Image 1 (cartoon, one colour):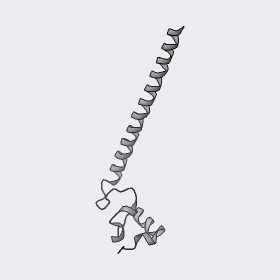
Image 2 (spheres, one colour):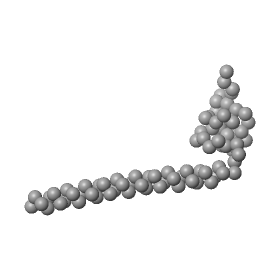
Image 3 (cartoon, one colour):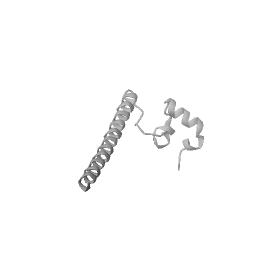
Image 4 (cartoon, helix red, strand yellow):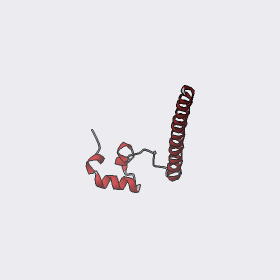
Length: 84
């Protein structure tokens, strides 16, 4: 009986290890796919320096004309003012 419970524990451990490994690999694959899609979307845009938010971009105060930047300027006028 003890042998069967040890075998059961080993099977459960292998199942959890395999599940965690699959989740990790799946997460990495999803991240790579998202980055590839983002790269394709921004490939023809010479002005975009590929930041996640316009507030981090150095081009925003200098007149970036991307729709995302225009929307950001309209919703956050105080964020666009030059500092200094």
